[in-house]
Image 1 (cartoon, rainbow, N blue to C red):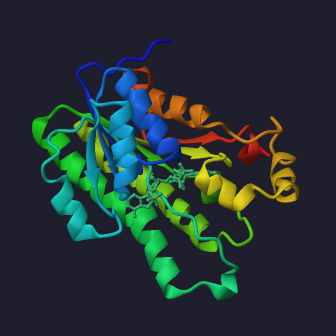
Image 2 (image 1 turned 120 degrees about the horizontal axis):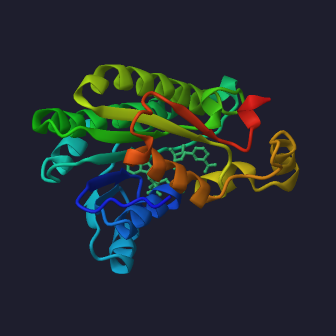
Length: 244
Ligand code: NDP
């Protein structure tokens, strides 16, 4: 199955590293005009060096006003990947207000805000579009020290469904991908300890973590017309973890 995005304009958040970076590059390879949004300028510089067609936008997405300002000039967007996320792992009894607010600001509020900005344009132009929110298996399963992260991803799943409901009539589809552990910088922070890693892989029927490409391929599918009738779906990329 060949997927092309020639003539499409895509915006990817958290495109500096990991899943977001690989998604931005894959979209560009498939012919999309890509805007990459993240907060570390050096990540954007190296991304554009490797793929000069990518348009960089440097902003801290936890800042609502700065995001509004930064995205004002990006122009029409047909495909959005709300990928930026943070995972601060803490025992429940030690969670602070700051950590809670930061996690919800990035993982939920920024996703809502960026999608609003993009979807208003899609609705006005009447062209439809596709939005993919990068959630997690942690939206549906409890993990120790993940109370805030699990709560943000649970909220993101419901946001996906309500967006699908409200934006569907404008032919804007909204879906999420929900990966198991992927060994990006974020994944390594939580799962580098082999004993901890084994405790997770032993619960995954396929017996392994996901690769970045596994997630990217599902994102591309959901962005593309190959999934034209899929809306409001929460797609596990977890080797069967959530099925058991
Ligand atoms: P990485 O930490 O490797 O990359 C995250 C990217 O998002 C970085 O470029 C980061 O920038 C950027 N980002 C984070 N906060 C902000 C912010 N406030 N403003 C702008 N950019 C920001 O993570 P992954 O690639 O692993 O994760 C991508 C998504 O996948 C996340 O939503 C995550 O929750 C989800 N996910 C990840 C899993 C995993 O095991 N890795 C499993 C399931 C879901 P900077 O480096 O400057 O912070």
